[in-house]
Image 1 (cartoon, rainbow, N blue to C red):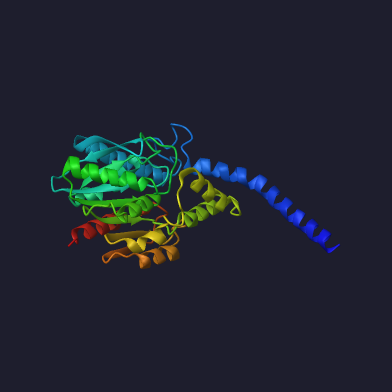
Image 2: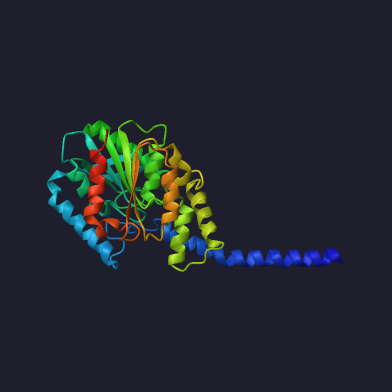
Length: 317
């Protein structure tokens, strides 16, 4: 009789798991497709990603105004990497061999990156803004959380070196753009021309920040969160543990400036402090801002934000 009871319990458990998965797997697939897959050519195009958000629209408008003011400095640029056509814009402000590459967050095209350019222009840097794969005019379907994007970044670095005589390069990264930057900078193929990174809202792992995102939009966490992570690996080959910033940043040797918000609900301050402490850079700095949400620090702290960047760049030894 005992084996019959055990079998019945096992059957109930298996049935429960199957029933749960029958409901949650479709949810996870929808969440993945919504958040990380370019399901049509218009998705993640060169438009404001969230016009209903006043701050986001204001950032977009200010960035586009900057681009209009400097239209005479712009050169459209293109590379072909990993089977994809990738597009960008190079703004030449100086012949001093210095340039920043701005790496935007998820869902954002190169026009979003305009907003972060003024501090670098003030510091005498040229500016490269890019449509990351699957965004803007660039080819691609999947966001790989920096795994394949990092190779694209290194291809852009080579473009700057060969075509524009650039020998000093910094990355300015926002959110998931930091994963791309860190993986590129800690790659053995990264050239000495890449001197440092300025990162806003860097997360410890994509799983951690996406968990916070799902909490904010009231999506069920278990087991949907890990099913979404499985979808990422399944479709892109990304090893989310190996490529997580917290597991990469100890290898970073270039200079690093971390910009964080005390009210960030996606890159939590306690996690951010852990990331900073683990950073392997000898010259690393952290600046905290009391105002502004995730990726919205500059619009709430314009002077302090830009001054922190200019000071960091000018202190290069």
